[in-house]
Length: 122
Image (cartoon, rainbow, N blue to C red; front, side):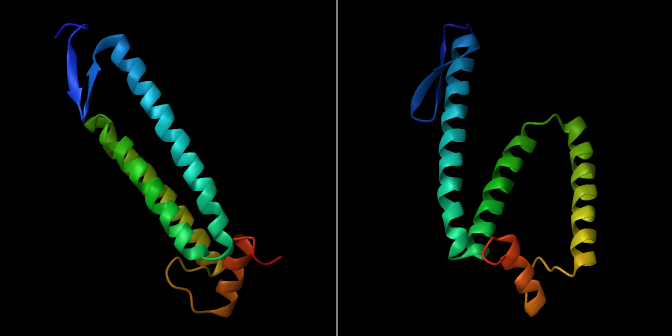
């Protein structure tokens, strides 16, 4: 396909080559900007419903990570998986050391830690 030819992407036409790359970069920048604005707005919710806001942000980060991972060469995906497992092991070991529980927390001490981390208690 020639660089001057167009491809259909969703509801609009997008060129290939340098022009298409520039359009894609602008689209990525716009999406990143709106994502950042949304996350700042969500941060205000930490004061009223921290668990919901944290879970919503976690879902957003996981979605972005999944999208990026889907574009990684298959030969490198196992490396990403190993890095993720090592990071998860470190996070879980730290949480276990400090007695935190990532699921529904019932202990008063764990709830106090979460509130402190969320900035609601000092």
